[in-house]
Image (cartoon, protein in one colour):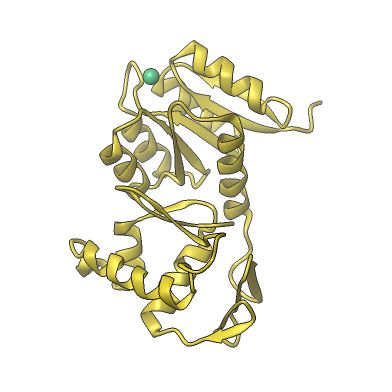
Length: 226
Ligand code: CA
């Protein structure tokens, strides 16, 4: 019996399926679905550790697939989206997809997204210490260090950083960050996030460093380097 974990690939385009399978089959047992209905059914019976989901499927919209799966499962979903459909990507993330790659994507990029999504879904609750490059955060004492120097963050700056750390390696939308830092009532205030992000980046000395910690995903949100 194979020891590999299962990856479910829901995609109607054969050439993309072949491309993805060539890149991930060493690590995963790949189950293929050409339609949304088959994908939803196989999610239930194959117990995949991750789902790659095309948004343009012949029977149902991929966004509906995300909604249907999220009714009963927290399996990480990575959306394979067409270029220039920023709104679809944002909607997919807001309704529960974990990440996306934009076609045409590279296999190393796809594998990095898969690793990040699986790591997050298996991650222990926060506690202890997070380190990435020159950033160090001690969750117990709530201390933040950049290049070994302590950084004084406001409550909201710390909340924003914490949200990014909890999803390190994957993108968070403006909506998700608004909800986490300010709460449901502030859904339309995405400039709050931008302003707070400017402050946080300044305190983390992002400008003066070559290796960035926080990446902007244009039109979508932000991603912390894993
Ligand atoms: Ca398609």
